[in-house]
Image 1: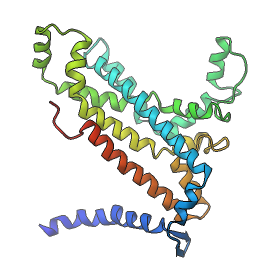
Image 2: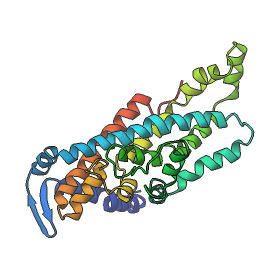
Image 3: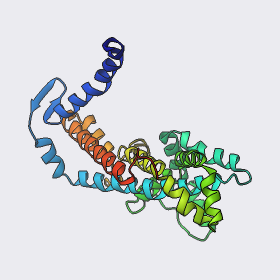
Image 4: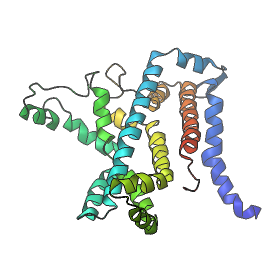
Length: 279
């Protein structure tokens, strides 16, 4: 029994436990190359006193909110509609799902051209509708954060597929019984579908949050966190510290991301009662 578990335990220790211990241990130290000096809470004190850190917190919360309050509701809505097997639903499902399998880096490259102030399609479209000027969307602090959010706000194919799969498992008898009681249209979804989708919605919210608190590639490619740190995220903030050779400080930022992720897992799991049988 023990021998059969040994390979899995070895992989767990090598790729999770050891990095976790190194992350937590180094976050309380000044680590530069081969030099490692214990500094206690100095990294965290410095972090809390840094204005850029709080900008990173605010931006990370904003991007996470876009994921939860835009992506998930849209995915649920489209998933419920397509689950009714409307005409052409398979084609719509494929078209909506394809963007989700494309990497964030590829999306960032496409949208960097879309937002380009000289030849970008967005400015051309706005010009057609009478909005003159060639706005620099990514390097204007008032629009950069919204522009980045726009690159992923409508990529909800994963949520759509999860919702459709969950709806397919709901017994048809429940809808038939509700129709006999006079329920029609969206009342069926309000009183039957949505309550039974609680686990699926909670899972989608959790996955979206855990993805967005570590958002890095899109921001890095589009703005590098600028202008004036108006789009920097926690992941990019930690990456900057790593590049400057402050590995201990970078580990402290990573510890914050890990702690936030743990809090989100517990909070969302309890809020949606993920894992419990829907009644």
